[in-house]
Length: 118
Image (cartoon, rainbow, N blue to C red; front, top):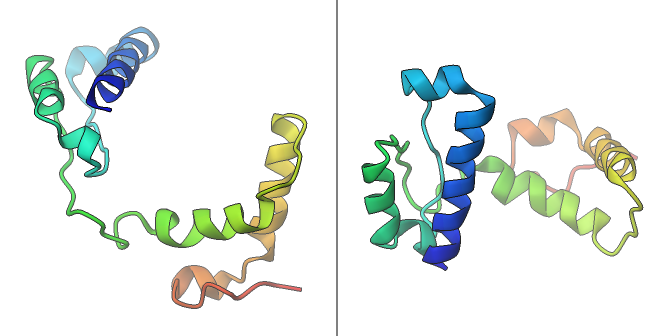
């Protein structure tokens, strides 16, 4: 998996270089990725160091830093999973509909993950 992550990083760097040259030239950006084993394989930090890319460190499995991974994405996935969506507009509409059903208080108290409007 590390070789796949490395290839994805190469593509990302190429995209940043092409699309956001001002960030590239000033080195005014950070890479944030989770602590997945593929991201921590020895070749990945070496690759990033060779390219002089700064990485924003984060503790492993921290729901406080990636709340959407532990609260929002599972909620959306559970409702939309198995639904046939024809195009990007259908996806946007389905996700927007589900986001509107989630009570505002649920975002302030992620432990209340079953609170829906309706």
